[in-house]
Length: 214
Length: 369
Image (tube, rainbow over all chains, first blue to last red; front, side, top):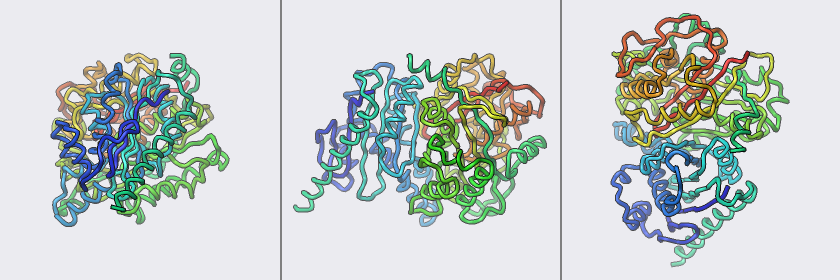
């Protein structure tokens, strides 16, 4: 397997393969990136933050996806986070406790795997999907899942660790792994994945210090 | 290709009963008895709706607060009674949990924390439990994932737990979508009016070896996305068609060998219609098919596990259970819905599930001779 591309976004910036593409300037940074990337997809505005960030993370990877064969059937989506759809869960509870009107448009986003559905719809991808709840990002766990997905016959995996809970640790880390390109051993791939995410997180922290000094 | 051949060929996976708790009983035997009498766990529960409507639910009586935690504790204790600590604590034993919402009562705290802590306290496993939350197909995916772990030699045995409980959150949510029936659900029937929600916990044990207990062989499974809508099924049944096709390919059996289909059958107009279209496209519409939702209601993350357990009961006892609530064909494509309990030997069984997010999943089981 080989990690062929990755993206990262949080309130401080949007990155592709380690490069800063956009700086986060607004509180509503997901909307800001969507507008600046000039994406034409009105359904974006209906999504919750989890789905919005996954949608953007996927969009940032679009150049990689162009060269893949049978991607609509042979790409598996593997996602995980620790807080599920908790932010939307709380909004839905608010809709029936305070507003006395349970909101169906919020309720449909109270499942974390909806973000995989949004990506599948965007691309017309019919491949396999799975969503895990993990206490923290675990590179070895992802690599194990990818290995097992390839053993089942899939050729590519798009994976993501997405935490969009309104708290400080908000981040959307996504990466694409190919079965066939330059075989890298699992341990090596796992180490590489940790390094990629740590670099992104450190960039984020540096930007935090910079912006708090201003 | 070499690796895939190894995966499909070398390590076999066997499923056996772990635990089953629902309004119909505290173990698998209770459920067999209830199903023989076509007894349903669904009852009218007064004032449970958002505007205090009287709803039909499949609700476990006498469950202590917090309901989720006490149900999970009860089920885990049954596993401790049945299995040695060396089995439970082995480095080669994994635990996979299927749940959509876990313990919602603790929001805004971590709703999944008690799942981990209860399992750790009671089962004392070597590895951290793996939680899958993928809407209504979570249970079938959990079984498929357990097989992945066994076939890649990461584990020799996996304890697969499916659990969800009723809550205002879930009830009001499905009410807001106008998806709930005002009577006990009637899957595939002409007069079906929607879902009846339920709660349950089911546990399966998957192993790479056979022992003396009744077991079935797990052949293969697959998932596929509809790529169509996040909360409505595809009209063409595309995802279900592809998931079943892929599962059959991976299993190495032919379509003609399938003896029984345990469908998702939620009893919404659109879901059951979609399933009829998909099964027709698969040329499986003549195979005896039922939905267990008339017995359990829709138990979300537990559904795939508890319905697979009842597939195993059907295989063990050579009995097809009537699809409760069905009397008249109500889908574009006519399915062969089981209308009376009947005695039939079952060799190969197909279990399917479909859910929000456009997910579809399938798995195939085989009788062990």
